[in-house]
Structure formats: structure tokens, C-alpha cells
Image (cartoon, rainbow, N blue to C red; front, side):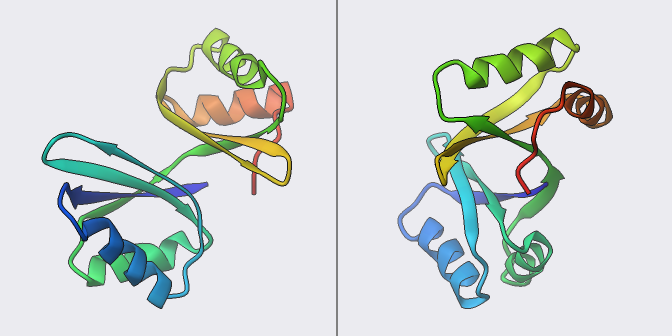
Length: 132
């Protein structure tokens, strides 16, 4: 799954500008989160058309990158995230960052890892279900 990371200044209106650009381009945000410091932040977005979003945001002069992340579907019950992270950790994977959300009664765990190919292999071998 592709995720956008958008550099944003920590000032009023910056996030709204990004959201309006995406709204006007008819891009649906599926999940997002902001990691911030006092002066700036990184707005991470999973959306329905990441290639289009990337182009539109770049054309607006925004600093944006696209990276591969994983999104694993979980049962909505305690301990499911711990189970997935345990499988990855035991496989030698380090998690760079993680966030989650609920959709249609299922948990979705979005994360980036230290080794994309090994993560793909572990997901397949362990039968983890990826969110599409």
C-alpha cells in the first residue's frame, strides 16, 4: 500500500490547505495522522488514489514523498495488534512507525518497517490479511 508523507508547517490553515487540495481533486482519505514538532509536522495519508494525490500536491508546491507501508486487518478485540507486532518482531522486523483505525468492525494496523521484502514474506507465510 502506498502512503503519502506531506511536510507541513505548524501554523493555522496549513492542514486545511492540504485537505482542500485533496477535496478539490476528489481524492478520498482513508486514514491519516500528523506527527509534529513545535515548528513543523509530517502529515501521513493513505488515500484512494495516491499517485494522483502525489501529483496534485506536488503541483501545488508541497513537499511530499510516497512510500510503501503495510496495512493489516485485525479482529476488533484486545491483543490483536500485539499478536501481529509479535510475529513481525520475531521475524527480525523493526517498525519505523505505526497507526491504526477501525472500519466496518475491523481494526486496520498501518505501519512502515525496516525491511519491505522480508515483511512481505512474513505476512504471506503467517497468513496475515492485508487491507486493500
